[in-house]
Image (cartoon, rainbow, N blue to C red):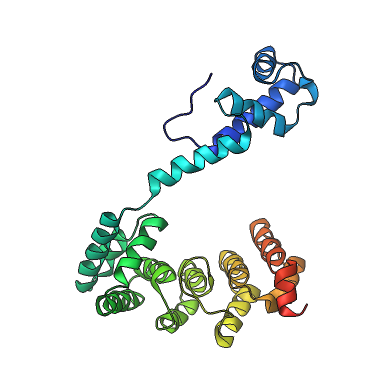
Length: 273
């Protein structure tokens, strides 16, 4: 029986199952032997991926693929779970760095996993005065170097609220493309921090215009996805227009994904479409 590595990857196990499927269909004896050892005699030439995944799971000692996937997920959650002490230490470090009024060391210190950020953010909110000073330090960083503008906008995606939103708006016209798209993401992504229901009308129109005509294909891509992340079903006609006009493959995939998200029955019904 095979042993999972200490930090197993489900993606690697998926690739392993696909490789087993291909090898079995090609008639490779070693692959067929592995298959029959855990699943018994079966037609290797027509092996389905789901059966290959089951074979891989059983080879690692699990009765099914979902059981293997659940075990890998549980191990990852245990490794990445933030502790109370860690969250308190991060909160204190970030508060202290914000008081220095230098965005560079603060941005470096904020480069930790999202789970740790969210845990520390909850601790920080228990001290409203220092938390507000921390947010203000991030907003001041929006006028610094291009790198700092990008990183501070990224931080405000997670730490921003209604009081910080309009500090990001000027960055939608920033000369640096990645700063423009990060500002749009920070204003739009409901999954990252506190965002309003629909976007403010003026912000929505600027994101729509960026999706239509920003000179950077990457900014147009992120504008399209920002509209989906903000659940802006009013942007569906713009996205359809992009699919008929754009030629960049990545941009087309992004617009198609955004259109698919906004055209889901629950979103369309909410918008009366």
